[in-house]
Length: 613
Image (cartoon, rainbow, N blue to C red):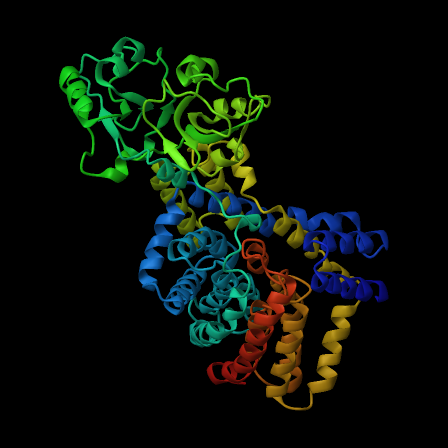
């Protein structure tokens, strides 16, 4: 018992200290309890096979696909529009939407689905994501108290209540108390969440502001003379190579991209778009789309000569460069580079490296015309376009230049927006399966995550794995076996016995308060589901000893177990948002502790009103 208590206290101190990552602290505690003989090897590793942990992995993949396809950005823009630019309105939209979804979907699933949407919403509105992400996790837990299926502890107490001879609880038996909880929690979070904004407004990823591909395009003004030309099946151009067309010589045009699939007919959900970096040997087929750069009169002549069509002429956004299979990168020339004083035409980057030079940045100015005869000078920066693979190969030519940024990392940021309908359909199907309980929740999530990968919502399987936050996964998996340690060493039994002996003679209201407090404290160290399983029978025994109904005691158990906000590992949603919001352990204490205490005091008085003793 002493070893377990000391280990848990030191682990809590490690979380507060924050110098060692939370997942490492949890693993150390797990190893100590295993080596000390408190936990068997099977018990220690049980968290890593727990359905909740496996489901979290799948939900990270689903959330990553939602973000990767641009669906999160679209939904985030809608939320930002509902917020009307007001931080308070945005906050209310996020919390209430999350709470309502959490009433029918697990709180873990709710946060995983909403997290990328809220991050995109914050970006669209210019707000700090940290202001919204912790309240997002808390709202999912509060929303879970609205219905029977909202959170596992609700199902636990419903089963125990029936075993004790009570009438079955309905789907909305929890609604009155849950609605008050969500409303009060939302109001309390409005001032409390302001703590989360401090010091984070201007902090980007790794402390460095990202320079996106879109911003590079704007800097070089590449879209102003870009034309999107569709090749119909009747055009004589079909089957010809770009070299045979000689577009630069005949029309003064450059082909920046050959896109296959976008112009083809067929169901949008099944359509696949691929891009090709154009070469002289590239063949044009019916249904392809050419992205041309040059004067409008040259485009008009080319279109008239070959029976083509300028697509979406009125919509500049559709004519902008996009980056699925091909991308952009800047290369900085080294002082001793062998290509200095050479012309770009003589260097022929397209033939040698399979990339096109679209512009040159020289002394703060951008040169994008008449590049063929441009002589390379010291300190020039070249903007190149090609497949991500070709740009990556270009970066290995270290003797002459350095590729600015990391092409592989940039490729992983590309939004596959043409797959957004697919991601939306899979997400909706998963939510329906979770609500209707068609298959076990973990299986529904795994099917959805696999479907996201197989339907091309990621560029590769490796990109899907990169979306998983392994720190959160290991943290939860390592903390779950702590319930075995507490039970095996008799700590749980000791707590319940002390509860009955201390408050048993003070009346039912005090017993309910004791049950709630004990549950709330235990939830800091073990999962809310495990806490509910341990304390629900104790709550029934306390009620029987006092000669009152067990139902309010059981509701105290489920609310105390679920409304736990003081630590990041108390519930999976708390852990899910920790890294994304750049939170420390003390952030949870500053915001979560007042919220947990005030809601606890409120529920102790509210529960007996709707469920009398």
